[in-house]
Amino acid sequence: MSQTFLERAKLKEYYELCEVVLPFIEEAKKEAELTAKSKRLCHEVIKQMLEKVPVDCTEFITDLGSEYLHALNEEVDDPQQWHKTMLLLKKHIPFPTKDWEFEVLSIFTTLSVEKLKAYVILM
Image (cartoon, rainbow, N blue to C red; front, side):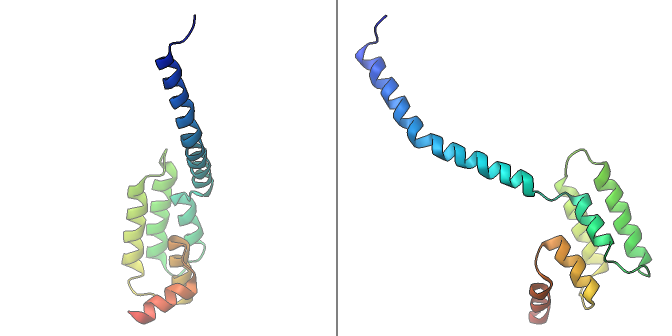
């Protein structure tokens, strides 16, 4: 069964389009894979923060521990959990002054302690 001229032209257009589009699709796949590998989970971040909080900050530890359990029990990493954790940090560290406070905020924000301290000085 032979193809008509129009069918061959459409097929040629399709292949040309594939040559243009496929590299973008491959790049998007690679980017998605990298994002999935580097994605931070809220419960893991909270656990890291808990390790920096001094034992005498019992209310903060209790609140963070509660959020840790909530985040751990979530089937998927819920954006609301990140928001709740952020509000908790604002409650317990409204204006950081101690080294451990900067370390906790550094873990949450992924900013270096130095950048956070510089930002606080500017405020």
